[in-house]
Every structure is written in structure tokens, then in C-alpha cells.
Image (tube, each protein chain N blue to C red):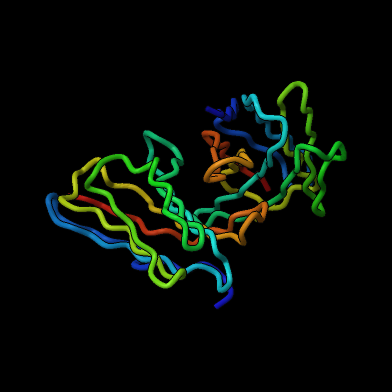
Length: 113
Length: 115
């Protein structure tokens, strides 16, 4: 595939459960971003990976959120002990190093009941 | 920290007409990038147009063009010959050249195209 892919497309979970969201960036893109889109907060940056450098986690809202990127490609965003306020669309984007534009995936809509 | 403001929560336009979406931003940096993204109901964020701050010439992409006023920190999007497929949320975004180079988004403008 040519674009960024994300899975699952939708996820419904119960409060307190852990969830994993997956992002597959465009082949060859070294930079990978996670953003969250919610009604109250708009679009907000969560975390950034660039090559083998340490990730920039400055946007993660709490220590319940973590992310990893294996082999410089696929990334997983994990939310532990989910809360209702975690309900949002989680968007992943990738770009070439030092490129100008980020290209987004279709997002994962998370609903915490 | 940089901020981006879109003061028009909703806009509407007649098909084939021209519409302009407003965006202002605040930064102390001299070099950066600006973008307009489109998000249709499918929720896929689609890049519409980009502008490098060091370029004085306004970017154009087919029916889409921008009016970049660096001193005024303004970056408006003009859509000419509006089509039904242009209906979407439009987000203005700022990207620093420092640090994580994350995108800072405005609140978005919902554009409706009336047939």
C-alpha cells in the first residue's frame, strides 16, 4: 500500500482495560507522529519518532500512554487502564526526514465505555 | 509556544463560487512551514497545500491558493470554483523547524458546499 495504515479502524473498550493501536507508516518514511483528535481538545500532538533517536514524548497526557516503534517502521500506541476521557480519534502520520509535509493515516476511533 | 487560530467555525459557499478560509498564527520564529489539511467525513487528513515561510510567493495547487502575509502572521486559503467534493473540515497547521517539528493545528473550519 502507498499510504499510512492504521488498525483497528474502530475500537470499543471498557473503562480500565488496556488498548493497543497500530500504525504502519509509508515505506521509507523515517519520522512517525501520533496525534489525538477529540471534541474538547481539537488536534493535539502525542509523540514523535525519528529514526533511531529517542522519541519525543512531550505530548503524552499521562503515564498511562506509551508508544514504541519496532525496527524503525510499525508503531504501537498503548493506553493502559483506559478512561472515558481517552475517547477520541487517534491519528498517525509519517514523513521523510526533514521533509515538509506529514501524511496521515485514516485514524482509529476509540470509545471507552 | 506557537498557536494557530481559525476564527470561522463554519463557512458555506455556492457550488462554483469562491470561498476564503482564514487562519492566523503566533510565533517568534522566522522560518517555518504552514499547511492546510482537509478532513472529509471519512476522517482521513489530506494535505491540500503547503507554504514555506521564507518564500514570498504564494503557493497554489490547482483550484487552491493561499494568501500568506508573514508580517501579519496570516495564512488564508482560497478555494476557487468550489465543488461538492470540497465539503470537509479544513485545518490550518504550523510546523516549526526546531525540535520534533510537530504540527500545531487550528480549531478547524467546517466548509459546506451548496448545490
